[in-house]
Length: 334
Image (tube, rainbow, N blue to C red; front, side, top):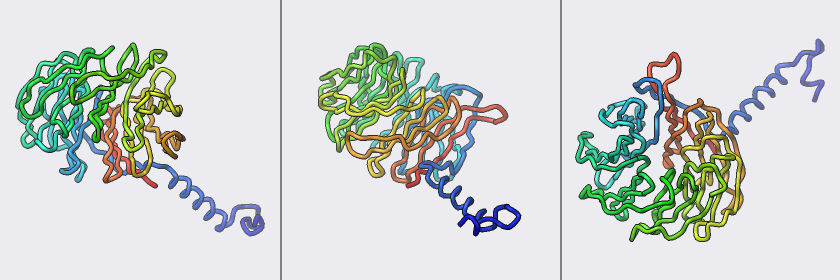
């Protein structure tokens, strides 16, 4: 084989070069995410925060925190279509598809309800420390992280329903779709709080008090698993959601901020402010392995995942030489 690959002058032949190129292509193909597009946005340099989505109508909603705007992106044509002003220190976004309403958690102390057709303001609901937002279509309730509480809003009447008191202010949280449960990461002292969403009571606290901080959270409902982004010594912690027992742990990059579980491909995607997207494979409910750490940009911490299109959208703050922030589009690959 060596003689076939080399010519008499000792250099590589065309055959050898072809083999090297083929090997390089195979190595590239093994990457689980490929950046396929960049969507240009508008705004000055500074933080972007969480994203929401209306995948059915190809809309991505971006909390452009530094710009005090809700940015609406057409992901079918990969372009910014509108910036809704007046969203001061916007942190979180949730879309209620059945009502065609958008809910924006603004750090100035309100949750704004917007009409999904023309983005007009329907109501501004006072809510100190408003941060991340989730919508539960089962109950038509909106859940908003506040000061040491998870505030519940009726998405139809736009009235406050309850405030679930927590040991500390909420960080990442998710609402289960098949059971009346919400799982909430809290700040110091760190816990995963389990909330009964029928009566809005905390029914369990899973302690992470030895950790310095918790970030995003995702759910594997079919296996009853909670995925927790731990920030102190960065790792993914996997919990049994009935007992709170930690069944697995995988190291991840620093600064985890958003996380998504694709049940079809058995992959977990975690966007981290240190400049990486971590990709982790689930072998079974109790076994996980790191597949890759995809390099991005420091400060690009938040993302959204479209499970139907297998695309990850990463919010990238404005970089030197650019005219505005960007949304990087990554295609998941088998």
